[in-house]
Every structure is written in C-alpha cells, then in structure tokens.
Length: 139
Image 1 (spheres, one colour):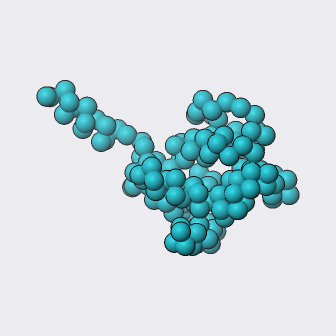
Image 2 (tube, one colour):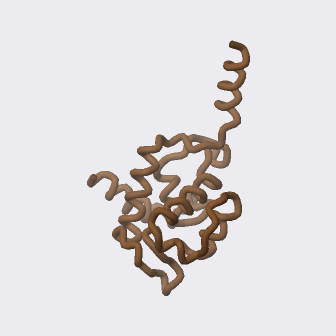
C-alpha cells in the first residue's frame, strides 16, 4: 500500500503532462486546424513557409523532433496524422505545467502554436486565440 501511495504522489508532483483532458486537447487542436487551413492537408501559407492542416513551419517541425521519436521528413506535415503528432510533440515539450508554473489551458496550446514556446506570454497571440476560441464556441 505504501508503494502505491508513493507512486501516486510522485506522479502528481513530477509529471510534466498537460492538465488538459484528451478531449480538450483534441478539441483545441481541431479548432487550430480550422483556423490555420480550414482542415486542408494541402495548404501552403506564409509565403511557402507553412504547410499542412496546422501550417507547420520547418523550424517548428525540427523543434518537435528534437525531443520525440516521430521521425519523418518535413513534407510529411502534409499528412494530417503526422502533423498532429508533430504538434502534440511540440506541446509535450513546451505546454507543460512545470514550464508554465500552472495548469495548461486550451488558450496556452493555441498561443504556443501560434507564437512559439513563449507564445502564451505574447500579446500578439491574443488575437489568434480569439479566432481559435470562436471556433471552439461555435462547435
């Protein structure tokens, strides 16, 4: 019994997992795809710098791969399932309770996606969050 309690307490204090439920994370990622590309896997934007449903830049993709085992090549971001794994790896790295000092929200996910690792702090990402939030509210 003591071992189970120790494990549970360790997980509570050491976990860097996002506090969002799987459904909340999936919902915000769906809204981000809608805002970014209207779910168009062939989308290319930002003068050719962003691709796929999430409009992933090469630097974002490289960053996500540094701490994950997703593999692949950049053009795989045109495949929605692969792009989803890239975004989730990026969020697993940057959208953590430990890093933010509090529970992660859907707003944090959207603003980090839009503005990089510290996007959740940038006033420039608030407008983007409002677009994502509108999609979430309209569902």
